Image 1 (tube, rainbow, N blue to C red):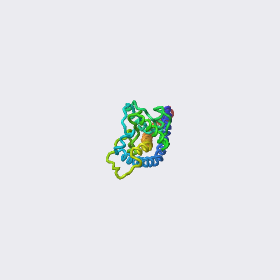
Image 2: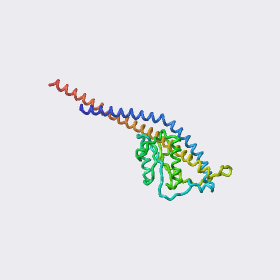
Image 3: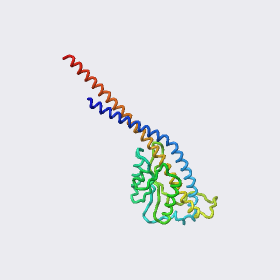
Image 4: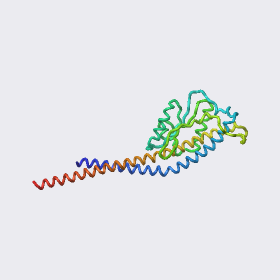
Length: 267
């Protein structure tokens, strides 16, 4: 009986320690959610505005000669895979890697520590990923695509739906598709549409990468907050059950001692 009480006390201490940890991590995630969602919304607005301009340019017949609108036939694709910097975020990282498995033969450019660890790349943190990092990556991708090294270039990231719901997605960024429904007749491009498109394409791709990283990071923080809340509730339930078992075991031990004392006094 004494051994059981000691084991239960040790287990209660362990679960209580875990409960404090999950609460702390949940509070940290909560403090980051607002800032992460604000950054996500701003980057998405910028990407949308840039996308409207690109849509106008690609709707022009002249832009069909751009190397960024050509369909190559190498049989190779390149994917930027954005995952988290840390774990304990539910299925956030696992969902991204499961989604990426559908493209086994793709060349992977990882962003996020977990992604870099998995694909053996230089560590590029998603939380501190900057616009300059995106421009450097974009220029390399555009240059290699223009040389005909890839048929497609895409981004595998996480779509932020709500604090309780996120899902992996893929954005194909190259080759550019012909714009639809765009009216560029009222806009004058100098010196011409093709030159402008070829000049700004790397900035557009960089904006898309930054937007994808910001959205994925917001999804990671939200997933971690939800996971820590769930873990905290489960730990509290387990702690209550262990405390009940401990109280019963302790009461049983006390009752047994009293019984033995009473029995001894009657001898």
